[in-house]
Length: 211
Ligand SMILES: *Cc1c(COP(=O)(O)O)cnc(C)c1O
Image 1 (cartoon, helix red, strand yellow):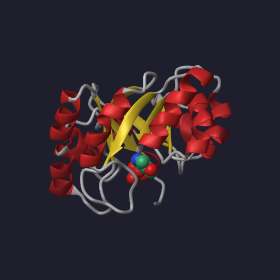
Image 2 (tube, protein in one colour):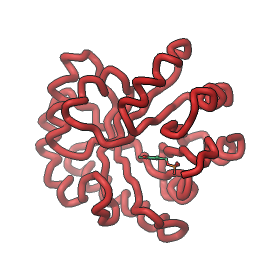
Image 3 (cartoon, protein in one colour):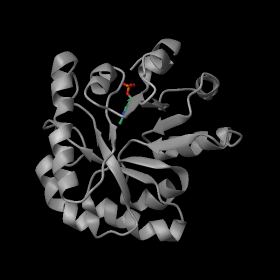
Image 4 (cartoon, protein in one colour):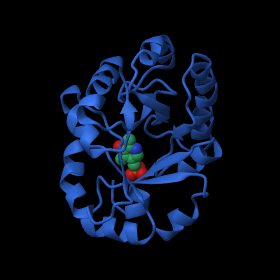
């Protein structure tokens, strides 16, 4: 864990992905200074959350696909949602923010390379949707999130991560403001940081889980 912590520069936020982590490991992560936890399933967060009520300085991130009928619960649990991946979901989040009284930081999940196995917007599709997103008054969209196709590592990963910058520029030209870039996991976070990530999401390398 130390080794990973020491390899993250201070301007990058480490989200410790806890999908395979025990509660004990999570408490150890907290003791080591980690303040951001990421879960890809709402249900797991719901089970773990009560064990950390004593730590009010924790920030909870939803990084996995969110079903529309679970938005209310997600708003109650999470401070950040990295997986805003379709307009229908954006509309539902916007509708429920005033109802729940909580407004998470939202990241738009994009595909920088075609990948039928992943959720997320194709760049063109997202660019075409911006006018509709801008009409949803409660949304706090603050950045982009991406996951690379399975097996892409090293320089190939770096080059794909770099594609986020022209996309971000085009989206910002349409009126969004996207200072946060959530990219990089255990296998590719060094390349992601080199390519400008502001948030990395690391699970197995931090918790030594077998994946
Ligand atoms: C599991 C997961 C991670 C962390 O993956 P590791 O390879 O274990 O670091 C990051 N992001 C998302 C969306 C995930 O589901």
